[in-house]
Amino acid sequence: MLPKLLSLIKHCIHSQWLRQLLCILLAFTTPFANATLSSPPKVVASIKPIQLIAAAITEGVSSPEVLLPPGASPHHFALKPNHIRQVNEADLLIWVSPTLESFLPKLLSQKASQSTLKLISLPEIKLLHDQHSHEHSNTEHSNKHDEHLLDIDPHIWLGPDNALVIAQQIMLKLSDIDKERATLYRDNFVRFKNQLDKLNKTLKPQLQPDSLLPLVVFHNAYGYLEHYYNLPVVDYVSASPERMLGVKQVISLREHLKTLGKTCLFVEPQFNSAIVDNLIDGLPITIASLDPLASNIKVQGDAYILFLKQILTTVSQCRREQ
Image 1 (cartoon, rainbow, N blue to C red):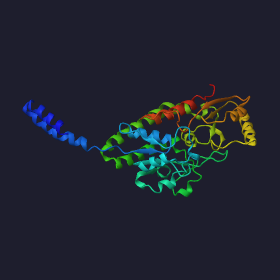
Image 2 (cartoon, helix red, strand yellow):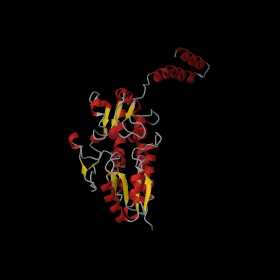
Image 3 (cartoon, rainbow, N blue to C red):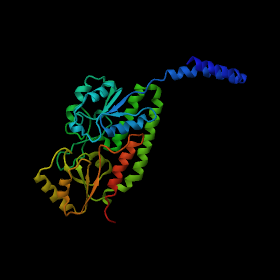
Image 4 (cartoon, rainbow, N blue to C red):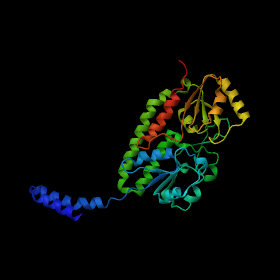
């Protein structure tokens, strides 16, 4: 730092007198200001969709990490030593719920509460019943204690209103941890909110329920999306992507599909094509793909917006004939 300081002072001597004073002050203050700038906090998200929201807030500062590798399901994930190290080293660990990431609560019990953010417990998050049967319920719940979360749908990131709450809470948490960059986090949140509003203004008119075909999803992860946009989701193939359907369930679902006429069936990257082939054989059903875990989305500042846009655009293409 000393050679740089001397070089700046030498340059100042050859400047005009007014510039000399300003230049010398700048020479003394700038190196010390740069030296005190701390490293950005290490942010780790449990699953990729939450990582995408975090990336919107940390843009220009850092790139958040994620625990689950591509293609892994949070329902049956086992932590390895490198994952445990990630959690322990995180300045902020963001996760959803004990019912989704059952591998985390025991490990997080040893971590300071101020360095974690459990999204399902945020008072502003709108919660829906988990749809374990073929009856769709959109009843909202308020947050109380973890024991009341067993029947709650944990896929909260698929509701744009919830995504905005998550982004805001990440912004507030990081602003408290990293006060010198608080303005940047706040500006990133405002940009995220504006991008989300713009996307909704563009695509929401294309998602009017009367203009869409009946929708069948591969598993019941889309309750928040359905609730927010009032989508005509009439059934789902499986309660869980890892749960295999029995013969009786396939027959029952196929009989229901027969009564719907033209329909859109949304599969997921890990779907069993043999089951789907049996379901739709000879029926007027259009197949499309949705991925609630954003496996193919590159992590960047506008990644969550692109993720949501991809889902909504796919859904909007399942239109009734005019």
